[in-house]
Length: 364
Image (cartoon, rainbow, N blue to C red; front, side):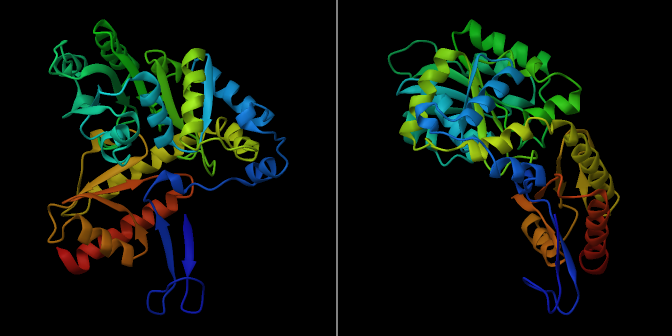
């Protein structure tokens, strides 16, 4: 996203110079296309709580077919989709096996224990390889002292892992291990289309190994809001009631679902985001004092290591912000950049130039 701020223009200014803001904090920053806005304006609607919104119904049907499930549910957010899945799969007092760095464990406000009454079993580096063996090790054998292991939650792409892809073969091995233990498998597939596009595989090759999957329409795909929870018909019927209990009944939601239907057709453009991420990573890696693990730049995320600077991650992110480049510090010496359709290749090259200027002028 590029926004111009001048001394006499809108928003804040940096001295008297015009600054183009390059915002790479998240791919949630994608905005609806003109076609989406028209579709939203003229969407056919009804009351979705009664199952009478034709556009929502069309979105749910299309989304379910796309990921190879019998049914789907339109929800306001990915967090709600994940939490409805946990509520639907588990009983109070159960335990859910997750990666210690997963979105569910870190970024969902403790809602698994807040709403479902379950305990999370955070496994370090669950998604980093040998996942099946780690699931087996985390499983609780029946014992009066233990909670019941009920569910495994995988995440693809893995945000805290650098936007890395868990290939279908790896997912199959992990899911088989879980099912041998009687565990259900939920996929937090917020960016599952990034995984499919990056690996050149059909999305169904990933989702077929899971009992349920959540994916976002608002991350990189331009829809203004919304996610999909998909699974078997009986699972979705139960999930629909939990959506209502959590306040997710959205009435004439076809206005939003119309954008979601168009988002489902925009997955191919994620290739450009991936290409720009590689350009950004390569550019950063050539700057003395900055490091990027290029092997982990598989999709639309770049994690920058600042240990070679006199600034920590937050300090360098602040310096970048002053130069009009927005990012998110995610560790003492780490900053995350996420590429999306609002950031062009020219923006990427300019971001690298500004980063190099900061390092050269001040901190090397």
